[in-house]
Length: 484
Image 1 (spheres, rainbow, N blue to C red):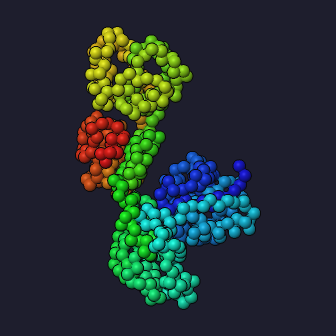
Image 2 (spheres, one colour):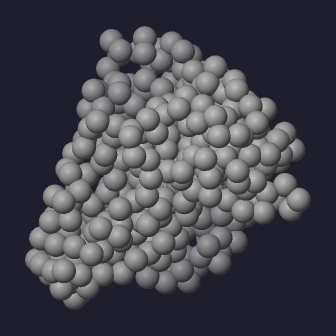
Image 3 (tube, helix red, strand yellow):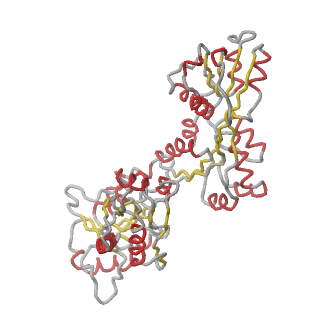
């Protein structure tokens, strides 16, 4: 692909607020140069071999000065690479994207600008504050709050700002809050003018302090960087429109331990309910070598997991080779996975465990019925043993094995510091979690809630010394999310 640099606005914090074009650019980039305010989850969309370079800037702490960032973009593009400069918010709203574009132009590097949603609008919206509202505010003004308002020559005209009736939004102004509020009052803004200070807007860590120009300084103890300041009568509408912080999992940080390819379903449901899902897969699925022969000789095929279904049908050339075999699925998710291949599932037990499936099959299994159980190489033996006791001829076909990912205890300990709930969707995830963390470190879980998808997983957790606090009555990801 031809060399090019995309200056991409990553949005205000919520990873879902990046534009479609911004996400597509991120997916195809050879090099991603990203800022401190970019949601790290966006980096998971990068190509496996993409070079990822952090150039974040914090107060009094710059990884690279701006001129060096400009040089880096030019250098990488000259290597005939597709470069994405991923910037928080919008590249041109106090993002210095213009400086980077000029540097690229001067070096004859082709570039495109991909606008992003600015926190100046989005953070207010997630706080339930419309930046404009008929009959209250018919304009808005976005101002840098990073400039020291006490310096001799001010580029921000506080005298003029104090006379505007529209909404004032100061970006990067938390440290200068006392000076900003003081100068606005000095030049005529009423001390009773409403003010909101929003930190980490659009994320589950969002915090909002509200007050007036006169007293807001006494109400921001819990506010941290990055934060924006909004001034104007629209702040009062938060009482009616605040929606994001009312979501049931808002503020919760939940660990998802499923295999990476499965984690997204649970993570997405947590996000939809306002929580933050932190993915730390404790298992990896590795298909084994196996043959699918004589399938039409079986009377029953029993699938005990979604993984088993996926591996089985990936190997199967023609679903018609199953013949007249009746299909069973141990749970609703497994049933849905089978139905994707336009096959009918005869039996799904009301309780998603092997014992319940046996009860359903007892009146149906005939002596010498041939039963195939495609599954993991290591699993509970309840199902094949009890089917044999009913007179069935059972073949267990190992399709895959679960392995321990290359994860360190130190990495897990750091993640656990601000996690409040840990979810387990299988016994393997629990066993591997404890192996990675180490039994000597289980005290780190004392103030965490443990959520298990069903009784088998819960028994495994209890056997390893964990206290189980949450388990749904129906053993599905949907119900697990509900009880959270």
